[in-house]
Image (tube, rainbow, N blue to C red):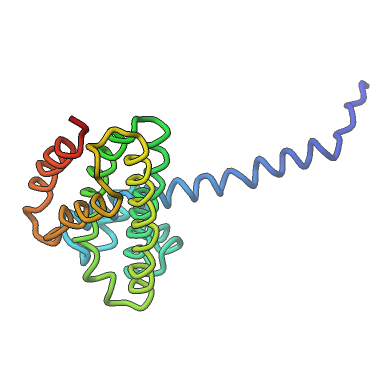
Length: 202
């Protein structure tokens, strides 16, 4: 009878590692689906939407939701943290892919998406200790991303002479005024086109 070749330790480790990695990948996918579903459900029905509805939209059971998020406050905080992360990391990604003025234009539209989500979850978020902490910590990375974009924009020479980084910051602050009103987003998108046209070097 032919003897089977010995199984080396490295092979066993590789099998064990690949087996161990799969649940983590599945878990991350479930978490991502839950966060996307929660964002959509909050936008459609408000932050008090039933968590069973969030789980249904994500295609998972309510037990899976609770394994990732022990309650509504944790889910709200996670949705908001994800929005902040996506907005702030997009600044460098857009600058790597597009000229600074185009990157800035695209980022402003992402800012509108972020503020629209913030409008929905912010009141409920600030009602809990965990949510208030997450909400308070978001300001610095968003402002840092804004400043990076402004500095690249000024350095590019694409904007009219004399524009300073603080001018761009003030323009963004003005754009964000009234974001808590439901009709704000369409108006803000129209204003972005005006803002970009005004900044562009003649």
